[in-house]
Length: 288
Image (cartoon, rainbow, N blue to C red):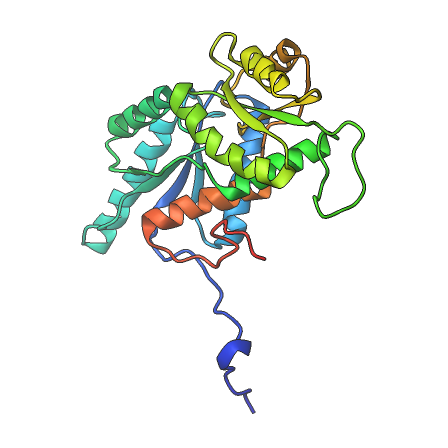
């Protein structure tokens, strides 16, 4: 005999999958394309697919232009052509966009976003663009994890042990000018609440900003500083974070990279654009 259907709070949730004909998720990867940035982007896309089976996730490089690193414009042009082919077979127009573009950026960068929009226009795809990933509490969590991995913060405030090299002041390094610094400052407040130490945001691409911020923290009583990159990774040149840490005279954590929350936030932005309701954890909302 078949088992009775479960009901009430013990009922298992229906498995979630991407709707048939849903637009492609196109991850817009900034910076000079490298094997490292491709690996990172593929891992982020894989996290998104694991949360939403059936998702058509693709990668377009803002500075790409060949078969190994296809440009964002080329990826969107292909998505639009595939949508048109489906319309010809079905005999009716597809009401949705061919793709939803999610920038692989923790914070706003007006110059990069302008280039992404231009690529979208050039493709003629009618694709939609989501917000960047931050500010968000999960990015503060990711920054905390990266600092603890570098031995610069306790992994958990509730634990009684201490880290001998723990920082008592954090420089949150970003790129993208004043708007990016302001946005990073919001995540910085969340990180400060987690670590119970002052956190100040500064722009890596503004000359002297990192050293001035280090002086400000030391002037307010912090002695052991740490630099926390509020960056995914591909958007900055190799060695820039290390040079900034040397300028400030402090140690540095790694960039956010393909931390799990990054993939979930990418999917969350896509789902919000398409109108898909995700489970709480897949939305990038911390589950207590």
